[in-house]
Image (cartoon, rainbow, N blue to C red):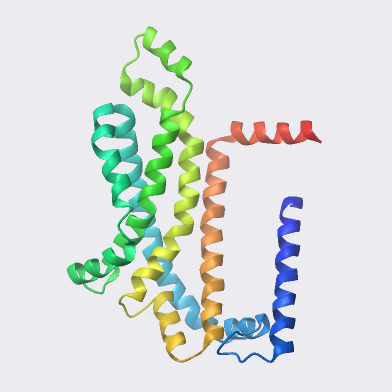
Length: 256
């Protein structure tokens, strides 16, 4: 808990400065609301925010899971078959030069205003970090272990299952954490372009009504949802790789 104390105190200090700054300069709420105004707006609109948040959460989770499945399978294929990596990896990198804001309207046109285009936007946003992190992890495993298994007659599939993928787990979970923070954002972007429900719709309606404190309240909810998702992934990582976290704990104890 000690490692979270400093960031929490720094964040609390910034909130106090923000409150003082707004009150001292008498800034209007529709320009920059004080944290106290945001808190009141969050409490007042909580039932409505919760309803929109659940819809956004469903979009984000579905898109995130689709990205995890697609990205992991493709990364394993590139780790198992070098020609697949030579063929597909450059295309994956090039695909990230296309702005998601240019692709999202096309998805709305092709698939309508239901949940599907939002899920696809989330999947496109989350796919790249998962795939690239896993591929890099597969490439950076202990080559001596690979050579040992080759001399013992192991097949490429066995090497991937016994050495490469377990060795790539830290990179895999790092990519998951990055994608988790992108997933909520991707869902909101999809909702901005069209829909009837979700935090993106709530933010758009609040901006058009000059209810800036509600926009900030939405940002608070989006941040909280992202942190919760990252925390869940961190917990799964600790359960999946206990040896790694035990090693980090030992290293910290040695430093102390």
